[in-house]
Amino acid sequence: MTSLPAPSDLLPHAPPMLLVDRLTALDPGKHAAGEWFSGVEPRWQVDEAPGDRVIARVLVLEALAQVGACAVFAVDFYRDKQPVFGGVDRASFARPVVPGETVELAMWTKVLGSRFGRAAGFASAGGDRVCEAEITFVIGEWKE
Image (cartoon, rainbow, N blue to C red; front, side):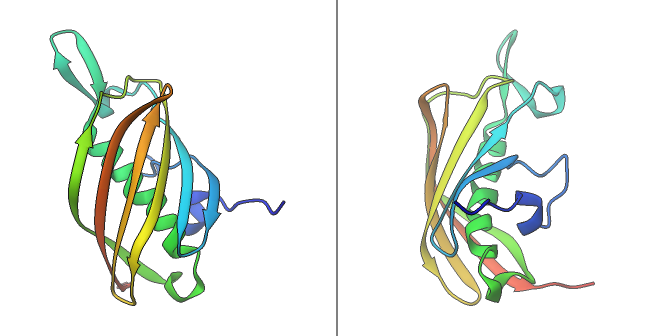
């Protein structure tokens, strides 16, 4: 079995905004799966109810977008391009992510062109599906 690249080898993100800690599957241009160890840093937490801290849901969407971007940027044609988040459709959240949980991420490309793409996938934590979404992205040129 071939080893998988580190997410930091494929994405321009750096900590603390790199939200994919490890890839668990990669089919360039088609599919990627990975894990995000959500940690317990207060900066990622919001109050769900008084005294009930959870990971901000927007970060789960960002983690999904990043794992999907790993599938795209594993293709040579896209390697030197700039990913830009375009939008979210059909997002649903079944339950919040609790700080310290490992979030399992999976995305599949539905449309992948030279400048635009769309992917769909889900995030799970503790054996529960926590989020599903379709994400649109734009692919641009790097600007120095």
